[in-house]
Image (cartoon, rainbow, N blue to C red; front, side, top):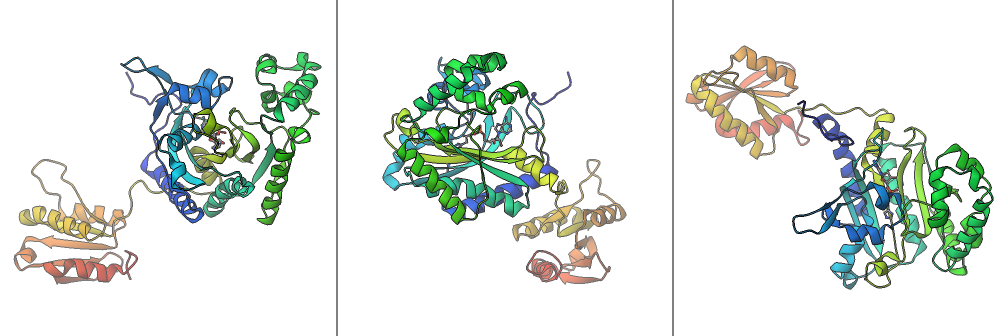
Length: 432
Ligand code: HAM
């Protein structure tokens, strides 16, 4: 048997992990400046949470969940998305008592049984934010501004912001009926999936990627023409704040999203640079979810962006993977039996003082590497300095320090080694 990771999952190897770290650090700092606190929820939840929260008729709940029974006979599901778990935590821990809105962010793995392709995986990762307990349209726009800021800082460009409003339980039924009447006249032109959606979830027909369905629904009525006063006012306010912040956007009446909890604003940030999976981030308002989960009336809004897609976009923007191993500051070369062991302690002491120190390891048990072999590895490692520890010098309490760029070499007392190395490296950890 050849050992392989399961279909739809991938290993993130050290070179690519550097890109992930950069994206994560950027997300962390953008969330800091916007005032969000990090939340980490369990990888699995009771299945009921997603069935109720995301919606029984959604693709996610109908066919994409990793659901299993544990040994106690409870039905559990690997988290397919982050919003329902965060709202569950908000309700469970009564976070409303800590002030409203609660502004929370996360960066976590998600699991969906989907057909894998570039930018679509079965285990994938999302960074996202949820602001719970406010109906302010400024927060809807914040959820668009945050991912934009992340992409801008990373140098990812060429994306478009699509915005729609799908109304609320007051006004959506009328729109739904109007849309159904429109679709009923074209039902023969719809794909089998959309014909099935027609009764249960007609809005999703607008979201279908099939050419025939897109043509049949090209002139479909948009929800914004059917909004109640409150939703209409909210939609106008969102657009006003978008204008105030100078965020370019396009209204898209076909944007309906695949999760049932949305109310009012929905949006996506899309790019055509990534092929079929071009949605970098998406989100919207979900004013009824906390109540649906038994938590009372807390209007909320959020977004999530795909980490894998951010990595792809970063690469498309010309960024390369990092080197698998970071460049050490110092390479400790050891000469003689005593030095072979004591050199390990020197490297250790440098590391304790924040200096990246590397040594060459034995290829054979009980045999030291030759000076020449060690110097070769030291040269290839990119280290700026070599510490050369020999038995004779150690017995005098000194080691040699060598600049790798020009070969200058001098002796320093062992107890001054850390200071001497730091003097050479300067504040930035590199040669001054
Ligand atoms: P979503 O549209 O299902 O929304 O996912 C958000 C983003 O996650 C997508 O735009 C995409 O970048 C990424 N994504 C989704 N599925 C996959 C996959 N199979 N492989 C790779 N990336 C994927 C949500 O999940 C909502 N919880 C967003 C939200 C938060 N709404 C309000 N708050």
